[in-house]
Image (cartoon, rainbow, N blue to C red):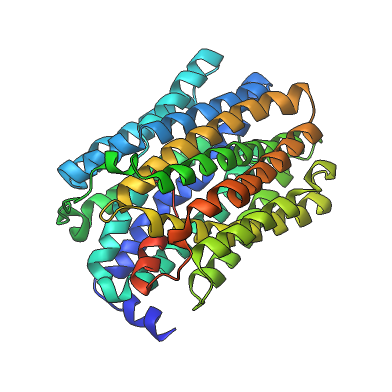
Length: 409
């Protein structure tokens, strides 16, 4: 605890934390805000899933380009353009009544997503220094996960208790506030991009990294099904208010597990940890298709979330172990471009399956995807990732923790 209190006392740390909270809360609200708004306007879960998937897809694909703007021009100019554009697009989306308009603007939401997270991480390197990087990223990850936890609750409350558009209006306002705080922060304005010694294309020649990307694609598809199936199932069972608590249970247990694993000293290697925690996700997801929105689904999602929180830390450590030197940012970008795109496919396809085939089938597809991911890891990936079968240094763990958020944001 002394490490945390000492770091929090450093100049600029508290302002950095405060500046990131509004934008991250807006991103935490994004998925359910779009879902409930589109479902209200169209009456279609399929369309709601397609719109949410379109935003995720374009956000994933454009992540590299938006990150490159930060790398080339610094943080102030790109954020000064993207933040107001994002707010305007969200505001225009809230006024749409046609499917074409809703989908078009959902696509634009992804394209213009301000890289708040990508901007915050290098600033932590400045204020913390290499010796306290792991502590800094633990703080930042905790804040990020907390906003991910409360965002869906705010979005659901506003959509169901105020109006379907209220979540979108609140998102736009929070992004404007958060963007202004980031842009006006001296630490952000003075930040100068560091040269990257390894180009992105070098990663595509690294077989170990490509194996991890393939696994991410399988897992991303399954996770996309889960993201849409929870609110879809709750809505179809006439219990839409349960969407946020169920997703919050998953996120909350993931936070707890991530904190326990990420902050602990351990001898287990990244590869060994990833293998077993990945298998735990699949095992915990086995009964998912037989659950309904309520306590049964809540228990299963709690177990899945806890396993996921552990697996995500080990997964990032495996990436850190196999990637070429100097490719940390590129590794995150490529990994998310593929995984995020497959999440988008899962969200869009899952919306259709939930409405036209059934929620049990859609939830069953989550389990199938998790099982396929585990089989891939144990039979194909693990034997080819032996470089990740040794413990990491504290510095490497710190860099791995830097990847615990979506580069799309």
